[in-house]
Image 1 (cartoon, rainbow over the protein chains, first blue to last red):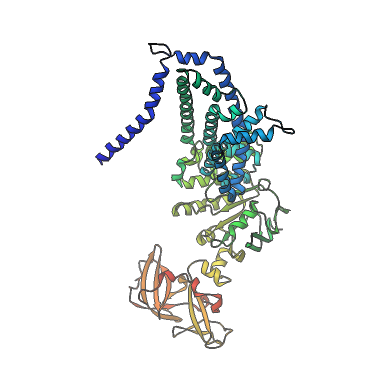
Image 2 (cartoon, rainbow over the protein chains, first blue to last red):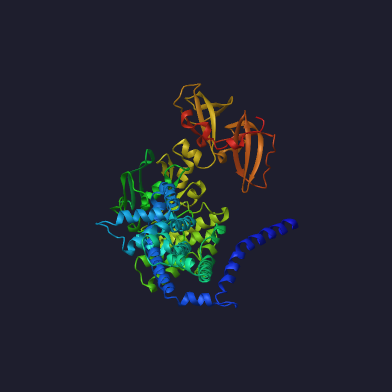
Length: 262
Length: 366
């Protein structure tokens, strides 16, 4: 027993070192922006660069649009599948793998070829970029929503609400969505994280996004990319922390613990 | 005119017909149970009344109007589900108020009604709790309050107690009946538990293969089952193979012992028959009796059940657990008396022995 504990601590430590060593090294490296002293000069350089704010703002905007469009499309679809055509679920699970299986570069060329001619000449419109992002984030949104739906008794709750007079509107906004809060939050943060750092689509559709900006910095500067990497790490971890914090309060009063009371 | 009327309703799922032309009239304020085994169509029928399924054929009338194609949210029926289906994100108070809000009641009106409901189910102090902080029985009471808060035309309950412990089940079923009586609300109750159905209903509809096999008051169903299926489904029943001796006087032979069925039998002498006898119809001793040996003695609380080996047949006989009377010991020879009018006689094909309710109590070594 004791040896086992020690062994698991050993593996845990190896994992920690494997994970944090590069991070610590990157962080240390990013502090060398000024010769001879440790400083946050590289971070300052990043923040004062007008391109940083511009590209980050643009990507954030695209990410928010992607979340809105993606949720509006995928949440009702997932609910509909779960309720009305549960047999189609395996098919949909395969669909969700397509954005992983097909490289973004192929998606980008496909979009460019299909939408560069009238009647749908959208190549120069951000609509096409958002559409591409919705496809890329589809698996993340669908899977979070689907697991959220599976965690509740969707059919039972819908029938209960209907028998109490609720139409589809109240059903969705008063019953289903409030119970999907955790799933929607995680879908949102995942999508934000993916879209803000996305490179391929932004480059090929020629948008001044944050992904291409990071790539450019990586080629031309020494310390600033390290600072950017640390910043995006902090952003991601912050998001995850936020999900945890928000869902913890949800769990305190939400479902899940109730299973024992049956 | 009946308050709820089902006219020849049929429901098919693909090639599988679950309800096969069922008709039923329920009066206003009546409590009717659908009783049957799994797959008999009882839940499907209830779901058609609620509007969650559309009948393939036939029509459903509520309060004189045909609702067969009306959406469930327009039928104004209260529904209680087996798994409670409370909204997990809402407190008890908000759960009960849900239907009132949808109906556009003012906050004050809704609050007053919710208070009334909380008092009815005696759960006032739990108003601020969330469903997962309640026991199963409490959750189902909240679900009941939520369903009747909207003053529905009728209350539909789909096996509401089957997820609960035995003790709470009995308590809650009495509560349901009390509340139903108090409000005079027309109620349809689906269950597979015959004791539940018999104890709370005005009428019980015993269902089999998508049709009502028999409908009647609980006493009628239990004491005068119309078919051997009903007899076997309701309570424990001894189904005994017998041979006619003299059809004119109704005498039959059970494993070589003569017994009277007290009526003229429409069969030839020597023909095979089935006798159905309730365990509680047997007495120890008596004129019209069968001789046997006690194989098992089982204490069922207020009832003592003897399993008696009569020429290789295991017959169950129930008596009250009366401390002043001696209970025969295992191995002892006894005579099981039975009044002729307590015997239901049927042909073998009407009462297959496989349906025998005592089979799990077969005599050891017999």
